[in-house]
Amino acid sequence: MAASNASTAFSPSSSPSCHLSPQEPLLPWISDNVLAIILPTIVYAVAGGFFHLLDTYELFGNYRIHPTEDELKRNHITRWECLKGVVRYHVIQISIGLLLNHGASPPMVRDEACRIHHAANMVHNARHVIPIILNTIGIDAKQLSHAAQGTSPTLASIIGGGDDLTSIITSPHQPAQNHLTPFDFALATFSTNILVPALQYLVALIVVDTWIYFTHRLCHVNRTLYRLVHAQHHRLYVSYAYGAVYAHWLETLFLDILSFVLAGEIARLSPRQSMLFASAATVKTISDHCGYIFPWDPLRFLNANGARFHDLHHQTWGLKYNFSTYTVFWDNLLGTTWADQAGAEKRYERVWALTGGKRGQEEQPGVEKGGSAEEVY
Image (cartoon, rainbow, N blue to C red; front, top):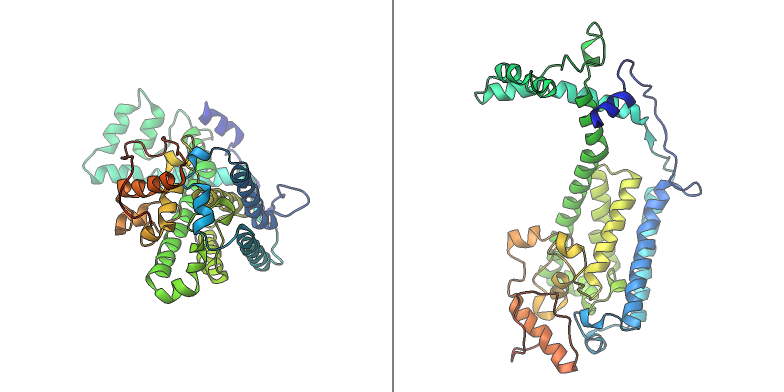
């Protein structure tokens, strides 16, 4: 059905018009370039404000990582001082974004029919490589294709690297590049709308995750960098959501902003892709610093790098571990993941015992509970 719809919508009997035209903005009163710059700040304000309400009205307190008293005792700045630093961060971020995009025109895009048609031609030409690969590994592609012809002409065409003669949607007398099948269009549609964007997001994630891991780790290895720059972020031993990006302005520039500029350029993200990627990253950053571990949090099931993972890094006994922000790949590979989960849990439980509080029991299934004579900090 999908192949049939694709072939109907993008018939190659005549190549579609492939002229470039400015892309219409998502919102008529603001360009996509500007929206991509300010949307992450709006997401930050909404998400940070939500968790601030939870803190203020002491909602879901049993899911907090730290008791409220611990925040008041250990943090070296007030919430008001933190908020001023966060506002400065976003002013820098928006200002640099507007500067880099000054005078930028709307993205020039081709009509969807043209993009799908172009991709279908690429798929069609690429299929000629399949029999070469099969023959190289000792499989007779021609014989296998002939055997499949009776049950699945399309599969036979794919294996043989040629056209499915029962599904050709152009005259055999037309040029070979127009012999496109429904399979070509179906795969082209999937690649253009799903596969390629997914790969772009993956590349962007790899770039950001790699850049932040190594620059973040450098800030802890180099004592001067830590003392002059990164120590500001660690004034929050007990982190909270809107303090997620509280940092020295040099860290704002070289860890955060530069990582996303590099990711956007290397992955070739469009303004719309950039606003989605940066907004998702903002939600992840807020979640990592929110101070809550909810049993229903979907991020917990996607990645081991979450609020608990990052909170360990904010403790004096965990400063040399858990440097990653988005995945656990580099920490696991280079041995900087905090491994003693039971020991960490004892420290947390000791803090709650000292304040007379009670934690939710869902966040660490299978981890030993109970008090300990170990030092809390």
